[in-house]
Amino acid sequence: MLDREFWRKRRRRLVARAITGATGLLASTPRLRGLALRALLDRHLAPGTLCLVPFGDHALYVDPRDDKIALKLMRGKCWQRRELETALEVLRSAGALRAGGMFIDVGANIGALAVYALKSGVFSKVIAAEPDPHNFAILKRNVALNGFEQRVHAIEAAVSNTNGHLMLARHRKNYGAHSVEGSARINATQTITVDAVTLDEVLRQQDVAPEEVALVKIDVEGHELSVLEGMGSLLQARVPILVELTVGRGDDERLEKFKALLCAFYEHVLDLSDETLAGQVQPISDCRWRSSQSDLLIY
Image 1 (cartoon, rainbow, N blue to C red):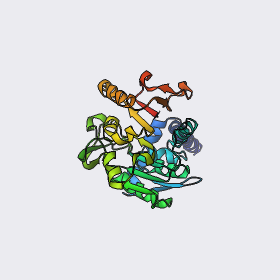
Image 2: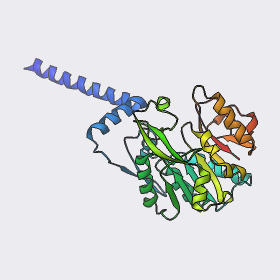
Image 3: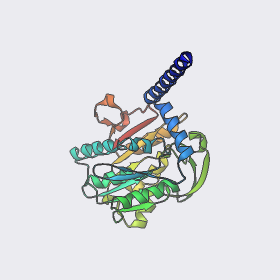
Image 4: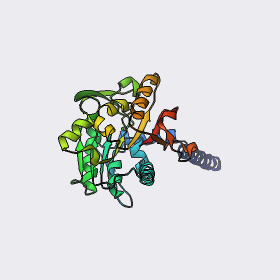
């Protein structure tokens, strides 16, 4: 009897120790933690379920299956709000910020940046373009949730250098990584047809003069050059650009065209993602982008 009780207690201690070790491993290993969370969500969460995440001055609906933007927001951290606020400070100091102007959000995802932009008090209105139907539906809900229906014009389309249609490759896990640059680029599991429009056409349809725009934000997973090629009126007006530049293998020619187009209209660039630059503004002609992704302020 005593031996049986001894082995029962010992077994419990071993199980408890194993659970503690596994929990510690998950807590200290982001990848394992993410895999465990996704497995739980895939098994137990009903399709279409969203989480409401409250912040101090706003709130956002997120899809918990998204392992990038939504995951960061659910941890209580804002998505690229600091980068936007830094960009506004730099532009204000340089006398390049048109107060009361419009904010254009290209690749708006679920609308976090659109909400931040209006919360900043700098912008009067927002044009937000997002091609993915699922992200777009959440964007619309977030705009309404924060009371900005009258100040945000949402467009369900990919912004490009042509008006028509494009194929959008959808990433299964990262809902901010969908791309019109091809499924091989992101190892996509689904491709859908989406509307495409140039920013020049958007401004024409909305009867907005380029001079009314204060800042254009671009996050399009490798499609940046095409967006620039379709916004000639904004380039001519030298509207500042906040762009996430995505660099892949074999992109040297695209980068040279991207740089040449910007050099024709702009002078300065600040890499907000490179802490080693410590806020150093550089001439665009001197820039060499080496990382796979860079958050650039161009003005």
